[in-house]
Image 1 (cartoon, rainbow, N blue to C red):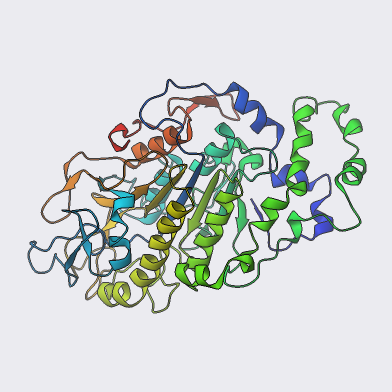
Image 2: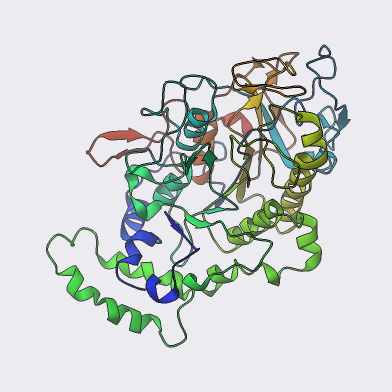
Length: 465
């Protein structure tokens, strides 16, 4: 994976840098022609782009978008339910701005997964991000460092099978990396698909002016001169290079000639009123950046919550959702106000710009949090905290052909288990592919020429469309 932090403009335009950068490379273009085409079904191919807002650390579903006011004390929590713009649908009082946008989104309240080992973050993250179970994690489900043998992330699959147009970015990851404990990058790379489909990483603080020098040619170099420097003609005639350097390779240069792509990173061009609406936080400005990238033709943008999944919750706008302790003050004072402002701004903004119908928006963590408050467990829950809970949790999904104003599925009276229409995260991923016009039944060959499916099991949730 390549970050914008570090490489100079000069180092970027070397022949060695281009394959690592992985933008509009030949295999992506060939995949567009070779990928199987599914028969149109509900919502198939409605989305041109995907915006994945990944809430690593996992918010409590009961205390946000699946309130249980009639549950016993010690389960229902401190927050009361509030009405939304959709009659009969309620959120909790800490999401008032999002409640006013409920007519724009749908809630899936019955996501449920049994991760490998204990209910730890790592295995659940990997399953959510790749559509398959990890084979090399520890017996407890803790992450191991990423490798090229990992299965590709959902964004990498989108980059491969729904390639962006020339001059556009395929897969971008912003705000911060996925982190579990000491491991960074869990389920984020293209793995066995190769570096060509790794995410373009922008992990600078979007509250500040972003350094995008590596997307801009130096003033004394044009595209013609750059091609001459690399001398592709001699490279293409070298033994062993024919398969990877064909006529499509020329489009790898088109990104550098695309003013709209580089301009997407110039948040300073946004009106102050818009930046304020999204929130002057790292998260808020990163989500605004994601909207600009979608406008510029990026296929898949992933915005990772700025604090790692296994980080001690602390005051401040960038703190963790992993609320083993002090769940209620953390959510009320910090997590939810930041999230609420930004999520509602995004939906409102996409809708006003006419982009929501063509942009699939997904907001989700790797699991939910336990119904029982403060129960001592192996995961070190303290006073006022909620433990990990993969058995039932909620996802917000909008746009991209999804019918808005729905609640899909129903959890039981304590929010512990699905009661109606249980949904696996793999089905959520298959739905995302379906919306992008990628048949979830598609197979590809890995580095050892073995067939691989895009998801381990399950298909799209057609009832959403």
